[in-house]
Image (cartoon, rainbow, N blue to C red):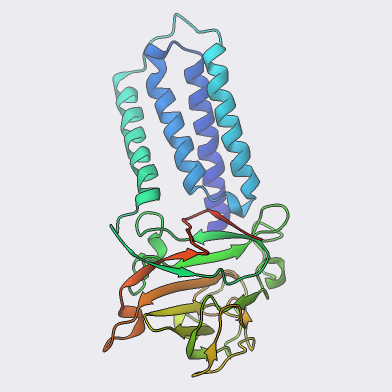
Length: 302
């Protein structure tokens, strides 16, 4: 199961990062700085990109605290003055890895899409803590959506439980174990419903063989944009084609229909351009309540 593999890889690399920082702290800086830089850069990468939410977002915070503790402890630790510099191949490997990871860290914030059109929406849920499971400004943070009809700014959103996880287990085949399943989706702005249906059954995780054409959805149109919201629960859509809606009006419930391995909301926005399908319009980066969010960020909705 890919979820266990990704979580296991995150935990393994976290151990490697801490070990590199701890190792560097036992040696003089002149012979250990390549280990130190490698450990810090790997730690930064994992803090931003790690799949901690499959366990709990609090595990990420704990990792960050441990990394800082190891770093500052190393300043005061007794140094092994007899330690020698790493072999040249290891030194070069450490620096090469550090450059790659630091580059990915910068790209986490900047993305690869350059300047983007921004759309401001109301957050489409009520109170709770939500999490950007997939999202960002193109590559590398939004790699899954990058090839989906230009959905470079699309977001997948899940809800967090009191333990900081998106489900009661790391992986579950029971839809009710996922915190967002059945959560009410509200209109993020005023507009007109272009398409709305929910006659497709919800997938049992991780089965998603029904594909994207069987996604229960609401497509909302404004004077300048199209807002697509998918993976809705079967028979939950409350609006109809052509209906005018206002921001905050209930639209449907979150499910697991279509090309989806677990319950979540998929949302993407495109500039309205006459003569072309909505999904070919210029993609737009979403701000919720005036704030933009990236991969693995928590949305505290009060």
